Length: 241
Image (cartoon, rainbow, N blue to C red; front, side, top):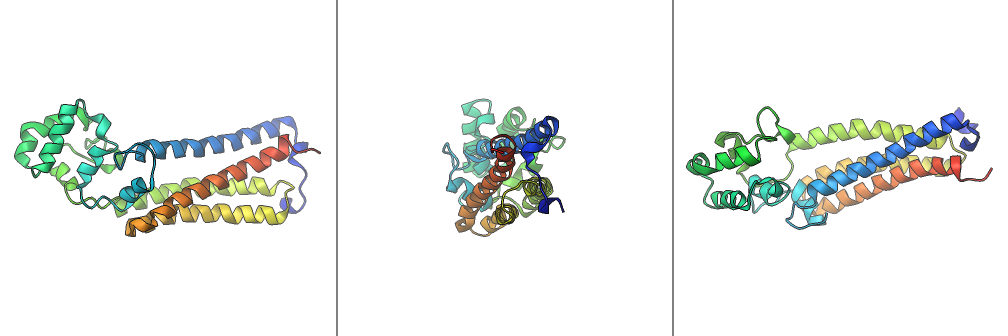
């Protein structure tokens, strides 16, 4: 097989080297954009700037002292309110028991202006709909973090997107002339990082003490992407013949 009889990637013609390099660079950029998306989306979950362990705990296990809606408007949804008065009115409505009368009198108008462009039945961003009081009442229960259905959805997407990409990157690594032990260790580490990254979400759903595994899994996956992308690039462009 090709991994037992490899030629240095440095000896490839310029065209294939450039194409392969661009693929590796794009894979790295894709991971960085994914990390940036996580940072921007989850860094304010605990109400404070910066991604922290508490953000992860609240995301997966929930903030059991708040409702799902209150957690959302105090975090990522805070900036979508048209005015501070709208935000404060919604907070007061929740504190007073979130009655249907209060919804009809004031809150529905606020949500129509600030929320329902994304959370209408037509848009349904993240599966959340807040068009009516009946819709919104689904988020007035105790916050228990990501729902099982949402975890299944994101896990399914993550597996289908990440596993094939890691497999391709591993194959490219096996085309290099690095020692076989190094290549095999990198492959095992990379696939294990995918398992840890996804599995940690489910464990963090069970207990907030597992939230640290989510951060470790993310760091391991980032390290594996860096290793799988940089090693072939090094052999193609920097390693001496």
